[in-house]
Image (cartoon, rainbow, N blue to C red; front, side, top):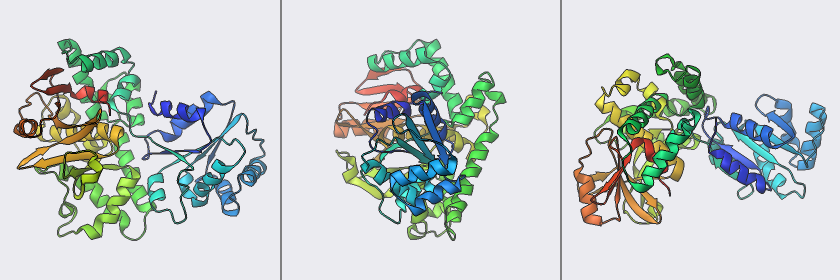
Length: 431
């Protein structure tokens, strides 16, 4: 399946002086996409899994010199590595801090090493790096679950993608039949989410969602929970799990600003803050902070004490909250339909921006603020076709933005300085 990260990998290929590190949560497809990239671009490709091949991991404990590292690997594996035509992939590199440190020396070497690496919980490892992380010596990229556009690509719906993009630009409504088809696919995406293994299963079942093995999602969540215990100390894994399980409850509240008291009665920030940082660094969840001002740069006005939390994948949220797919496909659970919709929007925006913000003024709330063409614009999210919103109207009257973006099940349109964007067209937003 095509992944957009390939565009970034191809850019790196033109100037590969810095080793490339791909960061992402477990099961997002890091190993698969790097394997395909290496096989398609190099005649000689060497793959080493440092978690399984402990003898290779031990090499880094004895030396950080790139030449000695490569020579030692050649001796251990009885292979010849021609640096001119070869690429080397160190998978699960997070198990060896020394291997990560060695990337600095690969970068600074006069030899033309082509090194890529990946691993689960790399973000956590970097955050807790005991020695000096090779800042500026590694090209870091992020891989997320498949977004809705990649989902359409996997279904070979390229014509539909182009039609959606065209109407996003023109603000002209799609034909009802096409609009309804896109909405139907969007609802299926809410059920499936963007984990490649789930989408692969959907495709293998001839797009029959009734026969999809949704236990795959349960298994991914189980592996996440296992990581929380495997890669933490003391009671941190338990606290991580409590926060993770509290997110669906938090999002279902009328005021879904996250409170630590939702995790545990009388809980305090200082007890759970390190666990929250762990989950964010793992990319299992994403965070949307309050912006105290709706001005650029939003980062400068970030209020870290008021925030919302979302799971990294809407399909995993559906699974964790135990929502029946029929309720989604038939629009029967209005409360959780809104929760899933907001999480979906957060996921799509997080892929583009990596930093999310919402805004409060007077007694009103704006779901998200985004920066497009240098302008801060309000984004209102509606899960259905009823798009009336007093807060959105008040924001436009008070702050006079160039326009606002309303995301809902309604068709494309532009009226009263509000750009109507169907939920399935969110991938068209540009920074």
